[in-house]
Image 1 (cartoon, rainbow over the protein chains, first blue to last red):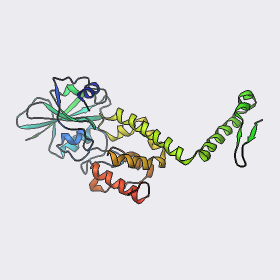
Image 2: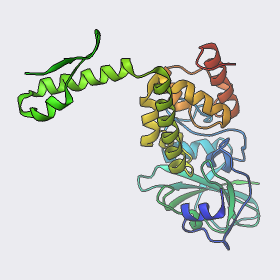
Image 3: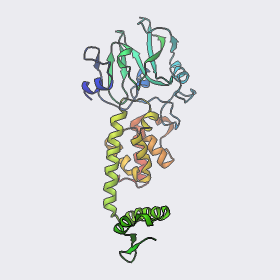
Image 4: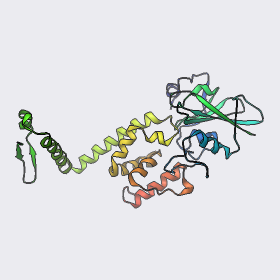
Length: 145
Length: 150
C-alpha cells in the first residue's frame, strides 16, 4: 500500500510526520503489535477464533483490554510523555468507548502502530492517526523497562 | 386468471407478454407464484457451468469491496460486519470452495465466515490467532470434506 493510500485513510498523516516500517501483512493486528507480538492476531472475538490472554474476559470493552495488557505488566497512567524507565502503550477508543486501536511508544518518544491489515508505521504523535474508525481518545498504560 | 404457456414437457411459465398486457388481472398471490416459478426455472435450467461463473464473479466483486473498506480495521468483528462480507456468508455452501481457494492465494480473515457457514472450526486451541496455521487447518479441512482439491 502506498503512502498515498495511507494518507487518504488517515488524514492526519503527512509526509513529514510518519514513515512506513514494515511490509503489508495481516498476520498480526495493532493490539498484538503494541504487545510486541508479530505472529499472532489478538482479539476477544465471541467465536473464540483469535488469541486473547487466558483468563481475561472476551469482550470489546476497555476493561478487557486493560486487563489483557495487564497480563504483560502494564498499568494505566496519566500522560503520554516519554519516560526513560517505562514502556508505554496507548489504547484508542471510539465514541462508544470501544477499543479500536493500540500504539506503542518507541525510545525516540515517537509511536509505532500497525494499521489494521496494512503496514506498521512510526508516527510522531498519537493524534496523527485519529480518524472516524479509530476514534480520538486514548487510555495510556505503562510498565517498567 | 393466469396464462400458462407450455414450453416443453417439464417446463411451464407465465407468458411475459400476456402478463404485461393484463397486469391488472393477476392477484398478488399469483404474481408471487409467478416470481417463484421463474426462480425455480432459473435454478433448474441454468447450466451448472454458468451458475459457477456467476457465483465466482459475485464472490470476487464482494471480496474486493470488503477488502477495500476494511483494510485499516483491527477487529475481525468489525471486518466481518461489512455488508459485502455478510453477503458472502449469505452465499452459504457455495462460498466455501471460493473462500478456501482465496485463502490458498492470500490468507485473510475468512475464519468468521467459514465458522458461520459451516458451524464448525477445525483450528486447534494453540493455533488461535496464528493466521498461517489457522489457514492451513481450514484448507486441510476443505480437502478432507472435498470442497477443494489437494
